[in-house]
Image 1 (cartoon, rainbow, N blue to C red):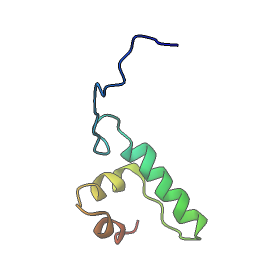
Image 2: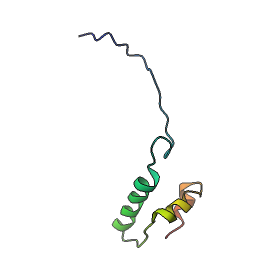
Image 3: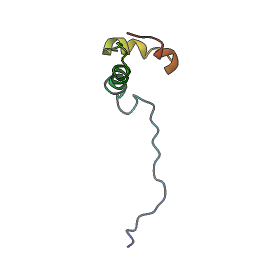
Image 4: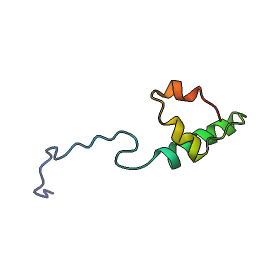
Length: 67
């Protein structure tokens, strides 16, 4: 069954975390906190601290900071 639609690529979207959707504070931060708890770490990054951590480039460097 033909729909008359072409299979040509019509768009490509690129996203850098937090550009199209704000996934950092209420997505990644919550996932980090869940992982910390799962591994028995008593770290909890609140929104304010995580906002400060986001100013540090590089995930490895940022992860060295605990709250």
